[in-house]
Amino acid sequence: MNLFESIQESVAFIRGVTDTKPRIGVILGTGLGGLVGQVNVSSTIPYDEIPHFQISTVESHHGRLVFGSLNGIDIVVMQGRFHAYEGYSLQQITFPVRVLHGLGVQTLIVSNACGGMNPLYRRGDIMLIDDHINLLGDSPLVGPNDERLGPRFPDMSEPYSRRLLGYAEEAALARRVKVHRGVYVAVSGPNLETRAEYRFLRTIGADVVGMSTVPENIVARHMGMDVLGLSIVTDECFPDSLAPVKLEHVLEAAFQAEPIMTSLITDVIARCA
Ligand code: HPA
Image 1 (tube, helix red, strand yellow):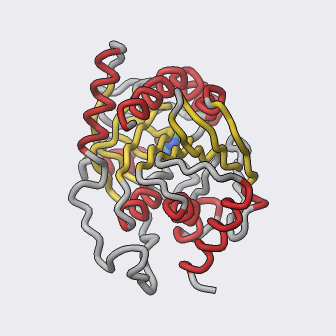
Image 2 (tube, rainbow, N blue to C red):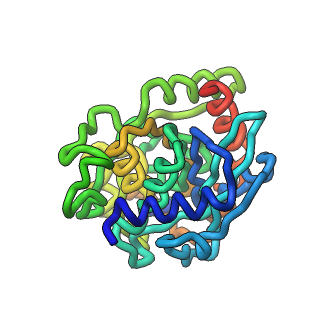
């Protein structure tokens, strides 16, 4: 079975469970599951029930699709995502994004936890992703291209929608929340970076570093979806004063910033309607 047929099969399965037709999809990153608490849930589908979906192996991530409405707008939330460090191919990681698109989703909002390398960024700050650098050494589009999904050589001149960035900045201003706008570099992980690597990543133009988001963005852009990316800085990665980082520390920062992230995402969704 080829990719297109697999997508169709997953879409058909989901259609059998729910007939809601969300145009907006949200991928929740590390420690950011709380948005689901605000959703008026109509149905929940665990990943392990959906044909061709992988099962997320990271304990801090649930694995399910949540359908429902947020302030009256239909959305679908991916609670739990897949990472390259779990051993999945980038095609596997991004399969759910293809399925969301198959369900009619045109706008993808992606959140993540990241390490801040820009010296003006502090732990707990939020950065809107303006652009990215893919250092995964791979692309989810490697392999045969199916023109029904998108072009062989998709354009990446606007990976993150300027319109959506504008909505997020307006929302932040209205709520008097400080947000940065910067460049996210994706690495495979799971180890964090050495001081020399942080210095390198900063030098090549990145403000933050993380282990997700870029594969999903590439696939979403391949299919012509508009993407908004929001990052929470969970640790400060300044090479000359680097302290050891623990997962609890990362999760704590994500949990703390979560209510603000949730309100920004909610506001953006309202502006999309
Ligand atoms: N590096 C990579 N990914 C991360 C980091 C980091 O320092 N913090 C949170 N995700």
